[in-house]
Image 1: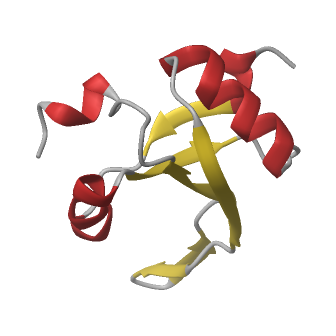
Image 2 (image 1 turned 180 degrees about the vertical axis):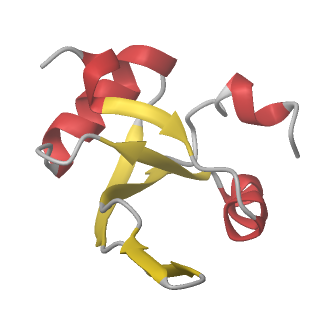
Length: 96
């Protein structure tokens, strides 16, 4: 897999904004990736050094609209922590 196929998009939520100062970033990743592929993709795309990667599989939630109901899509989320001497990711710098 190419690096841009692994990282789909950043997840920008209240919790992820709080961790940007600690060099922790949250990404939506492809469902069939592992920690090693995520680490290599982040290092290649952003040119940083990754200290650790944690991954969570998120199950879809039940949503209802009147009598109709269904589930939202399942997805995989990666929490990436950079090393202390690594530079910050420029994309997130403008957000914090």
